Length: 367
Image 1: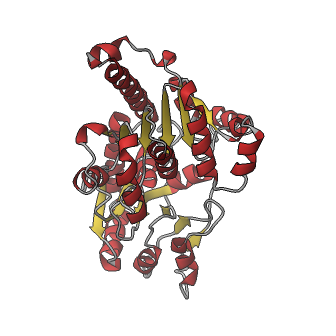
Image 2: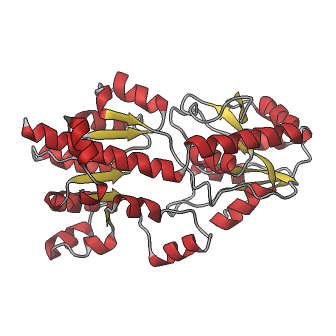
Image 3: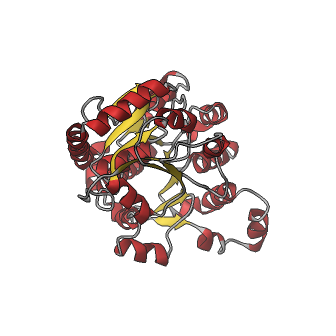
């Protein structure tokens, strides 16, 4: 019955509201079209979804707008989504906090509504506690980290049939091979990065390297501060944030990309890994419990023991001295991206999940 409903349902007939951090502006769309930003508008166009943003919040009654000025933005968006929920067939929450806030409102008011939650890091203790409490108000939980899928099932007791495990994504048309001479390497990212180990590994290597890291969400992460706490950086090492086009150029000039990670059960480093592979670059990455779904060790990249500067230095030296190996890994990585991790594929998966969720809810109502 559910399959029949799904087959007969068109995404264009489903009224959905997507709640996420940030949104697209006309300037962003213009930059997409000019190849200056990775594509984002495909999601909204494909799902024909309404986006919860500041413009939609501004249409709320005055008393709610007054409240929203006094609470966190994610909470405000969740409350407004709750207030508007009956106008939509499904609410799609695309962040941990939005998902937890919205599900909590449903739980506290003893209400139910089709709710697809895309969540990033559910194993943090506070998030895990609240997710276990409110998971009954999440119709479908979307995850892309097998460690989190296992955690959700085995530690939080979430029914496996409620979880959809899908590959994550990169805009492989923006981050694409750009064949040019490679005279350096790079490291990219801020969250859960082990830059002290990386800096130590770079000592004694005459290889130019740039660490693309800076402020995010208005603050400087401790992982980035750790770079500046080093008494002296290797002379070949530079640090600074880059725009998307500058980052793409950095990837293009790099023979391979290094992603040093702190111990983590999440997929920290995933975005950088996918961008590097999409650019046709080999990846050297710390082996952690959370980072196990993308890199094929020895084929698309190299895993090294976490926190071991000597092992990291040897891996860097090996790929630098064997560019043909790095090139072959890069080609295999690009092939894997095209097969499994495209933005188009991710959006199609979310579309199908939304259709299935709405179909299931409608079927349950008829029982």
